[in-house]
Length: 292
Image (cartoon, rainbow, N blue to C red; front, side, top):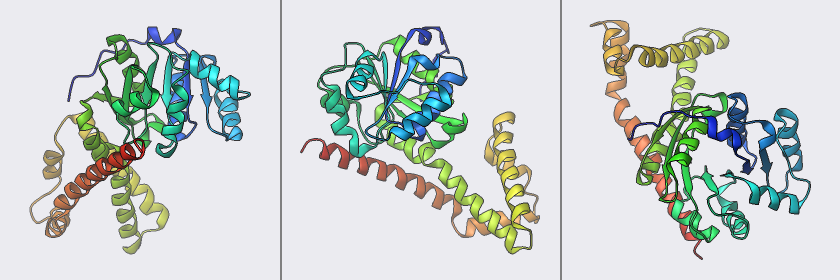
């Protein structure tokens, strides 16, 4: 993976943002922009297909601009310097077709639509525009996300920097080639769910061993939090840290031996691979549906 760009936020302050779609990821990103002081709420607009209540909630919570009618929506889309595509994949073709007559030269398109390539986005809009494809994960909603970004050839160096700055407001970023986006989906895009699954099992084991649900939950949460922090803060490999707490014939080693007998490592690797494969399958299905 490529090196991250150096953070420079000043150019963002002069930009107008529009979020096309108002789901949880759109909210996470716009909240990060506002809370990190990258832009004022008045520079940010949000539109969606029909859920006016959702837009009203975002306006009330963050002070962002919302449309009052269809013409207002078109104006917000056309005037945006940075346009975020946050709609559901099934709505993408219709939404991008609408942009064909509204997008302006140099308008930066940032997509969080899973499975939709930069090439297809450009084709559906009908013009050559700078497009950033991203794969954030759900931890972005609490500012601890991991986002991979890739760029088409139209994206300038300044636009690359702006994109990185925006997603660093909700976590860490890494720049990849677009061919690697499905691998990122398998690893970090779906990754939080793998950890939750392990946590579910640990909590249940604690309960089965006689702990109260409350104690089992709190101990599991702190254990996972502490383990991740240890890897992050010490810089040591997980395998090294694991060996440090696995005394020969001790309790931890006994547990690891059970996991090894049940091919725990192999199962996790297969799961990540399958997630990446499914991402490719879904992307292919979406690509086919937009060319019918």
